[in-house]
Image (cartoon, rainbow, N blue to C red; front, side):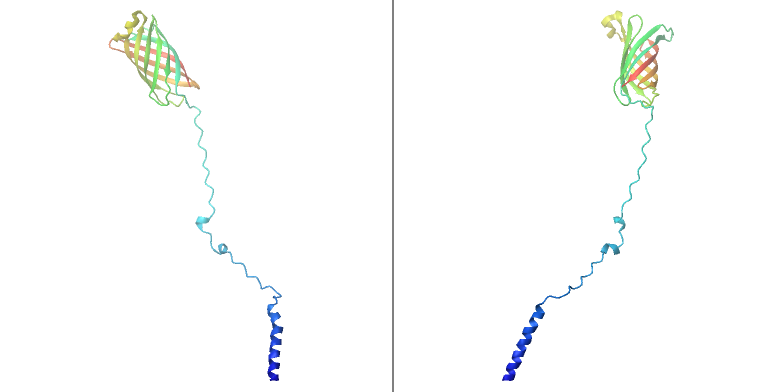
Length: 207
């Protein structure tokens, strides 16, 4: 019995002496785990993820021609001579003006009035077709209705059929100093009884 008590006592002493050693902390920290490998360094770069090249810079368009006529309307003052046809007797002086209504492209409306000798004059309106109208050389054709005003007829001039003409015009125009240009015009007036020819030289200003 004494041997059994001695064995039990020795067992308790061993257990109590070993317990602090299990509860004490470790003297050294465990080694740190290695960092994860960079997945992107091993994987090749996708073509779609590559850096885009800068777009090609296109050259600037060439400057517009310095001989460019941008104006939409025009006023013309002119001087010339007229004669009856087919007889040519250049003794009728013409002084007049024309106004080209604002429009960018032909046909363009134009109206005007001319003063002739002996208290007579012409009022006309029609359409003008200008070729190369944005350039400095601007030839044109015009077709208009013309009315002869005679001061001796008073209001009867409006009801006289012979006072109405169909007027056709051919014009050469050149811009000499923008916006000023020079016009040379040859015109023919035709009705059932008379034919009139006219040539004028005018100065125009656009705006």
